[in-house]
Length: 318
Image 1 (tube, rainbow, N blue to C red):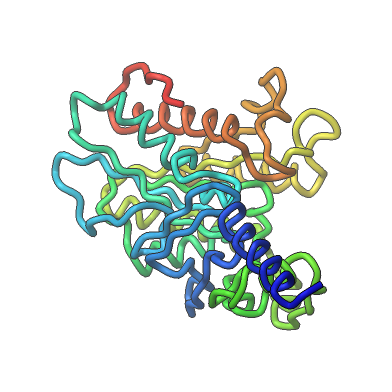
Image 2: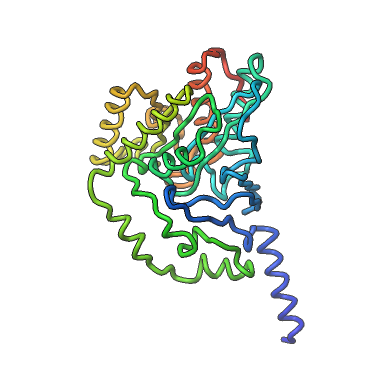
């Protein structure tokens, strides 16, 4: 095989990996002392055909003004990869985008514009989300929605250790798409001692995260905006065998905590269990697909409409 043929084949593979799958242009991350890490601001990419845009505040979404106009309803959504949507969700199909369209149809007589800001990153927990809110504020939102999943009740303390060391948190673009494919799917990951230490965090993890949740609520109240806590279940929690014993205890603890703190809490476990085919809502064992995002966005939007005093039926937006 001639050198020209080898070079030509290399170029075809490289271009194909970039144009068809988005390899070579992953989202990059930056470390943050309090938050742990953030998606690097002002970046765009396509992964497996799905458009992803990160704005100047490391949110998944288009650029925004720090202060909205008086005619704008603004909601701040805080969360992890479920809120973010990841590579498997197009920008228009994230929970925040679906919420924006649903809310716009419900409050059209009250606001000229609706914004749902999406401050999220993979594997964030309540302590990361609290730190984000403390650093950036609530962007003058009328409501703050904290979207967690069952695992987040056991989330560890924020750390920047994965940035630039874990292949899922790169701090720079790879030189070639082929290099990224090799790093992600061929090269065996090297254990990171600092991350291992964080994963073995002792103490009352559930208590630490409940404290972060109530502090988020406190910041929302101080800013005179509504606060809504939302939790989605893991796929294995639905139906049989149901949540594990330690998850049941943590869930009960969360429910009682929300009652004491007067936190409006939406638990999607019974909602998902009531669906005819709840498995059809999931991308994998934890993340939701478009159908799951649509259901979650509709229920959250209805709750927000009521909490904000605009009680009227929502029009389905797909």
